[in-house]
Length: 443
Image (cartoon, rainbow, N blue to C red; front, top):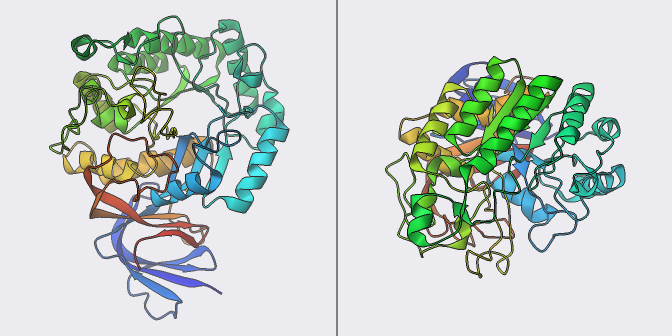
């Protein structure tokens, strides 16, 4: 029998409106007791959590694990170690792999490997179309029965509107969302947001309308079909307004926001590493650093403010990271014009979001709600709360932990983040999955 006591931590559970200083006793993988003065029970280990926040385990519904076929970027071991180090007890993984996660065989092999090697729970997202080619839908019923938590051709928009409508109809049958990367393929070709900064830098831009036009199309199709649409990585103020309007029509639309679209702007491409909407900044970086190249791109300061207000007001259902590892030869060691799109995020979500909490824009309860309670509620997943008898999936955060983002400090196999070299405040110091400590800075 294993026994672990977390002593004197601030327990924050939005699901039960719990916010108090207390102890948590874990016995054989389950929460046995929550309360004060639980010191009478003998334990194998006791952790002093004074000053720490104990929350339900965090879930990231948008992760690129790169398995199968791209293990040179990330592996099951490194990706789930990064998740654990970031405080995540579960991750949903995108299907833009090689081969794509479009069949029972491919998904089954991934899950078998994850059962053997993963530090956290891994949930697959199936492709919308076979091979993500945009021509033929996958078998929605078979994949849903096998356990996929959604369907996405992430990285590619389903250009065929008839096919997208059919996918949304299928979502009503299986109760899983169609998770859309919204981008007009005829309005792309740039490397950053098209605007004043791209013009100043002489770099080809990506129009905001490329994202917004496909958000509008997919929201209209969701309204028409009654399907469940989940809009990935919303990055513009207009995109959010479209989603809000679709909801007033009765469309079933959920949406997510990424930390980097709240604290980084297109000025980061020009080297300014100010955490937008906070008073924190890092040293000036090289011009057009390829680690700032993401899709959708970093937008304007006005966009970040509107998106942040939307998060605070409840317009965004969840937070997610879009953790997108790339090897150095694909991104960090090449010019921005040739670099791949994406940045890692699993290990950087806690300090990024806590910077916004310190600035007074959000509460820690709101951050935990969008990274834990709401993913569990919306997708009907285990966890999302801290109650006696529950399986112990917990995230423990030291909001005052100061650390510098270095390659050695990161568990992810790829190191593509523009936060390298910056000092951050706040870190997950322990992550517990089914009662097992999988990340530990408390020793």
